Amino acid sequence: GYCDSKLANALCCQQLAKVCDGTSVSTYCVCPGWCATDLARHVGMSPLTKVLFSPIAFMFMRSSQLGAQNIIYPIIQDKEHLQNGGFYRDGEIAEKETEQVNGYGNLSEQLWKLSEKLVLDQ
Image: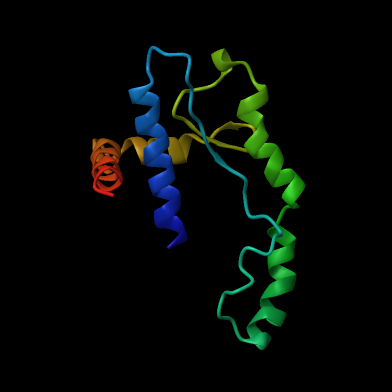
């Protein structure tokens, strides 16, 4: 699901930072936040659930423009102020998420090797 793919992206970002260490390549994982987009348009929710859930959801959602600012943040910052392979949210390192990703040990390397194998087997 969504959380699994987000974790996989963060792990790949972390491993890419290790692979590219010592080069001019930097990598950052960013979370745009919960944005008001059409991403969930095909979620199987009943019309009643959508009606009841929508007012609450919109209280916490941000615009797609604000979400895009989070994605752009590491691009416009000096590399010296960023943590290579770090997880960013709202224009700063997301300590909790970065620690969680770091807590998976060598899972990022295992995922990287599996991905290489799958791509090379094609």
